[in-house]
Length: 248
Ligand code: NAP
Image (tube, rainbow, N blue to C red; front, top):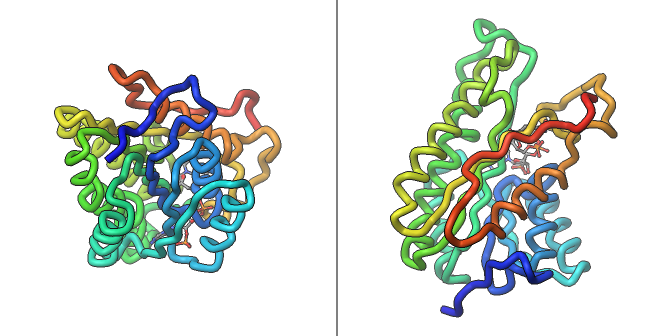
């Protein structure tokens, strides 16, 4: 296995690296996939919507990058395990895992939230990253190298009235990240969390009155991911809180 490059001095510092991005069909995940591909990584795109994944793959290839699609429903434990097997068989490595996929039911008080919506949010936002780490971290441990980045939210640092379950799933994701980071650092594998404020996507069918141009843009989150995967070998940033420069 060739030694993967990881230096800020190169325009394509991720050459020879394989990155798996969940929720890569649109929004923040699409922006992360495009940026990692421009940095030289072969990007494995996953989500449920196969035609949209094919569109992102085509865009990456048009820009001269490498992408592969691996459709998967993150709430399906067997499908996630099969995805891990496929990554191992077809690519033999996973240098970067970005757990970005997530859903949010917002503007609904907790006491009105149906149980199945609670379950769906926890399964996607918290159990999904657990399943993906379980499936792919063994490849990183075997390589004695790797970076896991979980996309949380400022709602995972603050109270979010109307979004208690979403907020709880992201507080949980932070705890999962900090704890698994401690478990994996002995293998030279790093786990970090990015917690953005509102991002200009259609997340949660956000019908926002905010000034969209002033909101955090999807590529701003991708730039934070780029920074995390090009750090010095001897240290790492474990948490990034991302806020809009001017309040939208
Ligand atoms: P988005 O545009 O709604 O995209 C969500 C992505 O997740 C889609 O690609 C979707 O693809 C995928 N996904 C959802 N359920 C899935 C499942 N069961 N299995 C596999 N993939 C699934 O949302 P976004 O704004 O880009 O948000 C991405 C992440 O950022 C989320 O974790 C969100 O909590 C977090 N975040 C967003 C904001 C914001 O304001 N936008 C702020 C802070 C944090 P398919 O539907 O094709 O499966």
